[in-house]
Image (cartoon, rainbow, N blue to C red):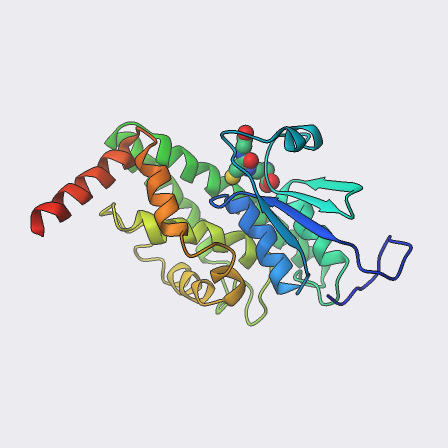
Length: 241
Ligand SMILES: N[C@@H](CCC(=O)N[C@@H](CS)C(=O)NCC(=O)O)C(=O)O
């Protein structure tokens, strides 16, 4: 880690601990920034269905990620954590120009809105609502399509917006297996951007190897429309064998 400036009075770099969950896309954002900025940290995974007492004690929202700094400071909200990590290290993941930076921040917010659509998608109970959510997500990518420069969001430099969208795209690596709809149909820049991000080390390593299996299991037990698609898929696979 190369410190840019710091509020910490000692020269010893602070100790960072990221309170995480294996499937959380917001945690992934923070992990991507920690990795891009080469920041040493400890990662502690918790069970969100059975939150430890120490976690509820220190968490204002009851959500991950949480960043513990030197055991005395706690930050919550993924983008706040990402911005902080970016500010305390050299070489910002934001563009320099203020307006461009604000533009990027708007799209980071947009990534969170797509994550909300994804959560509605996997909780929805019938095919009609499911298709409706897929189409909402498609429309959102249609919106961003004309703003993508490539190979990354704003050209050659990996930015915070790439960190925000990496976890969004990752969902579709699993979801695509079970749906016939290509939400990126005709969105050539989005497709290319997705591919570039999938090859970025920080994005690949933001989750463990078990992620696809863990996500599939999580989706299977939602009791929602996607759960029935997964069940159907494994029944068909069984028949073919
Ligand atoms: N706006 C928050 C969202 C974080 C979030 O929703 N985390 C989920 C897991 S992906 C969580 O901790 N949920 C537990 C709960 O709501 O009880 C952020 O950006 O950090």
